[in-house]
Image 1: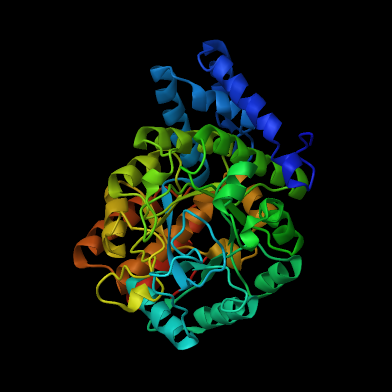
Image 2: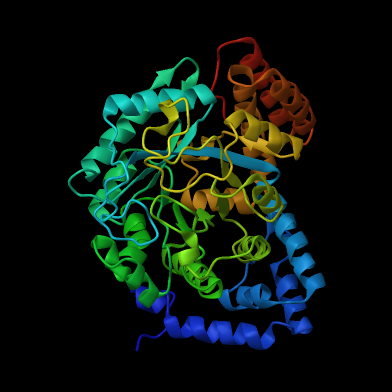
Length: 482
């Protein structure tokens, strides 16, 4: 029997089944222990330091107690703390991105995904480089600057060479004032050598969802194909970081297994990366199983209510205070609105989850990976965020200035967000308003920028940011950054 060891490189030791079961039993035993819950919340609160703000975060066991807690006023206290932590480290900025599906050819048998090999009635597509250019132009014409590329696992149709060629194509397209400045990559677990190639290609974050941390469930849900190998998949982040990728993104597909188990496993994975690599996950995503071609989410009996889903988001934010948290268009407007107050810092907008979907006038459904619940345009999402007093940010400066991995985390922890990320967000928002926004969106945005400029603490930074914003308004100059 494997022993729990967060510093181990073996999946069954750093995601240890017995430790998770013991954690869940401990959480059940203490879920209404007010003194313990108060102590955990106090530990998690942001503490001022000489250089900024410090947050200790929580262990997987402490966080599991909060998740299990059933005391209404304590749950409300968690929600307030989650918002306080999010604002302390990320301010009111919300980073905007879009997924770009390159190919839905796949050799795996994942039972929750319509791309699975045995699905014979989904339309299989793989974009050519010219089709990718057209997709990128369509995305640039919306105003996007950051993409997450997605592809099924197929060594014949989607080898690493294809992914690398796609990255080169995406970065090469400059249409009007448009440019994709950062591409995050969500592809199957691969080798250290291939991760080095992705690093050399200039990717942002490498994202890989675990789907489920429960080994037996994992193997049942992935009956065939290379993804069946639980250990190879779970250990992928260590190989990615060995290959030089500083920023990695975790996530589970909530609804496949009991949420308490997944929550504990996810936090243990974050603790493992911190223990071994010296830096935790750059992002954590929180997708839920959704309807798709050949997939009925009710077939999985672990589905979550919206209220429970929101509680999970808040508890992740409290436990892993510095991580970026992502919610996609799998979720509708109402859920996303609540989630933004509970710790989410990145959202997708105007998304299409089909291969080649952005060049189609009507939203195609024949090759979608999942149903999109939030079908608003990017402009509608930008306006909605600003009406909620968030700053939609198209910023990619940290990646391009080398502020990744522990360097990004030290910036975040030192409280320099308002002097760096805040003005960068305002400048990229101004680009969007000038180049792409509808008149109503532009009016709301101009007023928001004027307000938010005054919140930049350093006068010199504020003056430079104001000048750059004037340059964006009155000339064709773009891409200023701190």
